[in-house]
Image 1 (tube, rainbow, N blue to C red):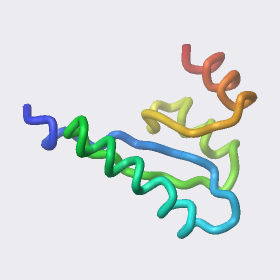
Image 2 (image 1 turned 90 degrees about the vertical axis):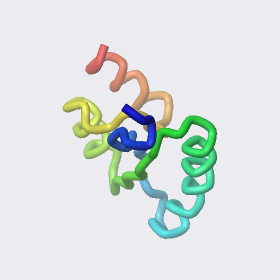
Image 3 (image 1 turned 90 degrees about the horizontal axis):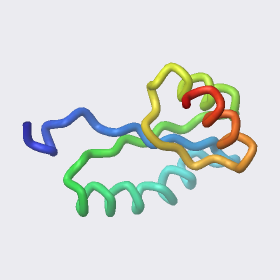
Image 4 (image 1 turned 180 degrees about the vertical axis):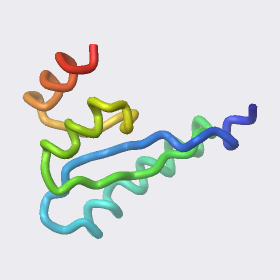
Length: 79
């Protein structure tokens, strides 16, 4: 299986106030990571932390930018 033929990884975060600006902010990073690894990455934006944590717990998100408390919640639920 070619790496680019893989299903994209899901990168998620909770929006601040402006989804478009937030997407643009993270798009550069995801494009860089895709170029370096060959693995496509999709961005998923959440309006609140609870929705992000819920989706993470059902294994629909591969990586996320979260604060320390959210990390602890994810670690306790996932591991």
